[in-house]
Length: 135
Image (cartoon, rainbow, N blue to C red; front, side, top):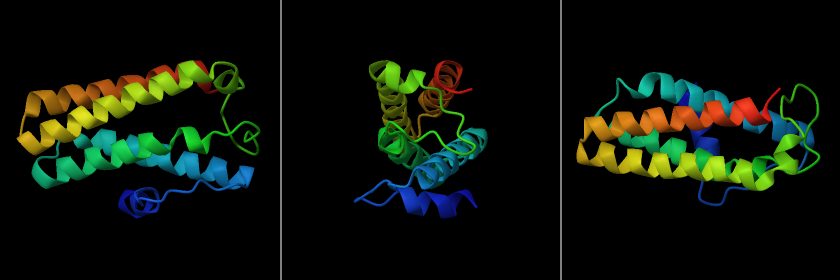
């Protein structure tokens, strides 16, 4: 299931939906995919580890586009604090992207310690963002 979602976000010419309900669904699917990848990432090696980190990197790259102002509808758990503190929100995303880039490099090099450090750093950004910006 997670790999099917990856294909929708991994395209080079990513275009976020414009309908608020579709935005909520897209970001929830992306974050569920990220959560599933992080849960399994510690057991991955080689090409699977590289692919997982590349997917995380791609997904983190799409997060800001999935949070335009006014996209809190339905079962969205996004707090207004996202747009009130946009720079802080984007800074957390950038930290996650940097960790995912490090994870890709570590996975490609076969550096298990650095790869696991990247997993922990990405997980930390998820927690940090959810504490500040999710109800």
